[in-house]
Length: 111
Ligand code: FES
Image (cartoon, rainbow, N blue to C red):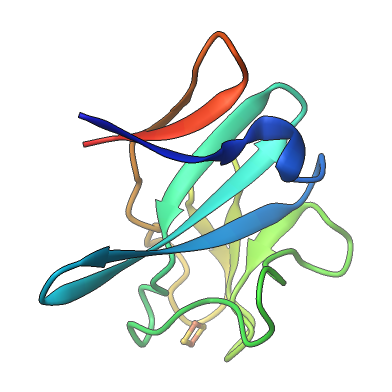
C-alpha cells in the first residue's frame, strides 16, 4: 500500500524534506530529496550514530547544496544513492526508502 507524503512541488528543487510517520510502537523518520522531477527517499538515520541527519527541521543539504549532510559530525551523502563520500561513515550509505512520484505529482512511500 502506498502512503501519500506530499506533492513534489512542496519540496523545493535541490532541497529535501523530512517526514515523521507514526507506526504504532515505532516512529519512522524519512527524508525525501528533490532533484528536478526526481525524488530520492531515505531513512532519516545517519549510519554513523543512528540519529536524524537534521538538527533544524528540513535542513538536510550541505552548504554548497550538492549533498545531503548530517548536522552532527558533517557526513555528506550523494543525493542519488545515499552513499557517504565524506565524514565518519564514509563508504556506508543511507538506507533507502521506496518513494515514487505518481502521475499527479504526489510523492508516495510504497511499502
Ligand atoms: S551522527 Fe551523522 S556524522 Fe556522526
